[in-house]
Length: 265
Picture 1 (cartoon, rainbow, N blue to C red):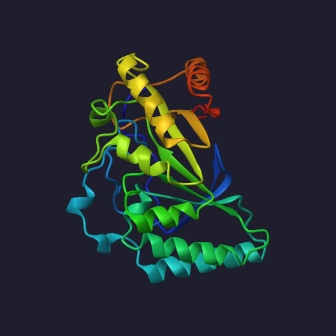
Picture 2 (tube, rainbow, N blue to C red):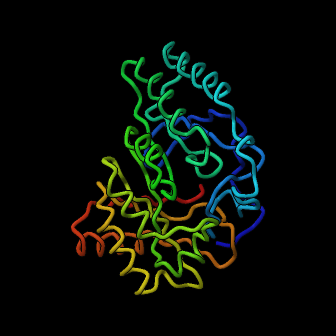
């Protein structure tokens, strides 16, 4: 799989979907980030939105959707669910990058959860996050109220982390893993890929296993890279390769591991 012009289009509103999620069923997305460009503090080589052209440090928080607009969008979609015009399994904080970068993330989370509590049965909630801001108490507390926190940790060590996830902020995976361990509701998501034909380096695998042990998640989710990645030289792992890693991880750490493998079709 090589990088190219094909990539997933950015979300142009606060609410999008429902989309059919590999892990969450019918998932309605909540995008708290600008529609004009990816807004992330990572620049992962396999990102389906393409490269991070502008870092959060170079953008203004004011480019994120305003609280009033978020409330209006959430109110509207909750009314549709109440009228049974829309059926969803999950409301998912995701969108055009890292959702916790919204300057009012904790307040937004509180509002969404309060609105969903009025539904019967209430859909579950999830967030896809890289965990870099879990050191902030308000963000960690907000995420602890979400049903599933799905945190990205790939098969890297602190050195290869800089060339695979390419963080645009000062952060260490060990610190992220320690913060993850304080949450009650965590799944670790791991993108499995080959770079230059190599599935992983032994040092990176050993370090990754140590991070999973520290984070102590309810589950590890291994998945393949489906869409054309941001960088050349990144290849999709096969289902057999991912299953092999899952078996090794279960045997080493006695952790629950699920494999998700799809093709673009």
